Image 1 (cartoon, rainbow, N blue to C red):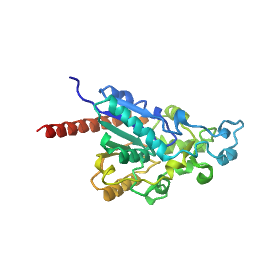
Image 2 (tube, rainbow, N blue to C red):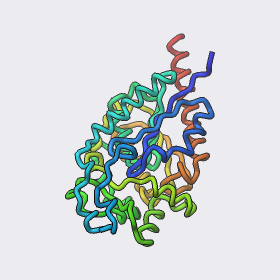
Image 3 (cartoon, helix red, strand yellow):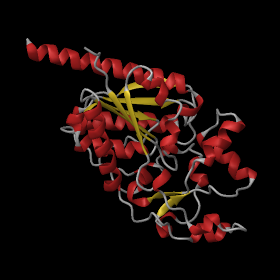
Image 4 (cartoon, one colour):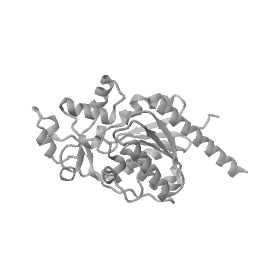
Length: 299
C-alpha cells in the first residue's frame, strides 16, 4: 500500500506565470507529491498583450495610454480556475490539497479557501497579499507598512483608465530595469534576472486588484494557514507582510503559522531548495494531522 501524499497547487503572483515554479516543482515531486501549477486567466499563456507593446519603434506614451485587452477579467474567473485545479489535484492524490499563492496570487487563494475550505489541508502565502475582509490589493498598497515598496514605481499609465496595473515588459532604460530587479529579484544574478524578466506579462486586470477580500471565520478561518515571510522583500515589504498576518489573525481568529526566508520577493528563483523544504514540512505536518484525525474517527 503506497504512502499517502498530498497534492500541492501553486498559484503565481502578479505579472508572472506558472513557470515561476519550475525550480520548485521537481523538488516537491521528487518526494512523491502531486504538483499542479496554473496560468491564471489573463496571465502567461492566457494573456493578451497591448498592441503598442510590440510596436517598433516602441512608444512608451502610447503603451501607457492603451486600454488593457484583459481589463474585463474578474477575480471570480481567477477563483474558479483555481477551484477547478484544486478539485483536479484532489482527484490525483488522497484528496488532501495544499494551496500555495505568491504575492498577488494571495488574493486568489483566499477566495478559493473561502469557497472550498473542505478541499484544503492548508493554505500557504508566499510574501502574499493575505488581506482581511473588505480590503483589496490596490487599497493595501498605500498602507503605511508598505511605504518602502519599490514596485509601485514600475506602474505605467493610469490604472483606472486603462483597466489594469501595467508594467513595462518591453524596451526599457537601465533605470527602469534596475528598479524591476530591485523590486522582484534583488538576490538573482543578472543572467537569472534577464530570464525571469523575459517571462513577465505587462497587464494585471483590475478585476483582481480592486476586488475586496471576502473571507469569513467560518469558512476561510477553518483552513490551517501559513505565511512565508521574505525579509529582504521590496515588493511586499516585511512590515506589510507582518501587518497583514496580524490583521487577519485579529479579524478571522486563530494564528497564522509563520516561516521566514532571508530573501527578496522571488525565493522560488533565488532559494528554491529552502522554499521547497518549507513546503515539504508543511505537507508532512498536514499528512500527520490527517492521519491523527483518521485515527480518531476510527476509535
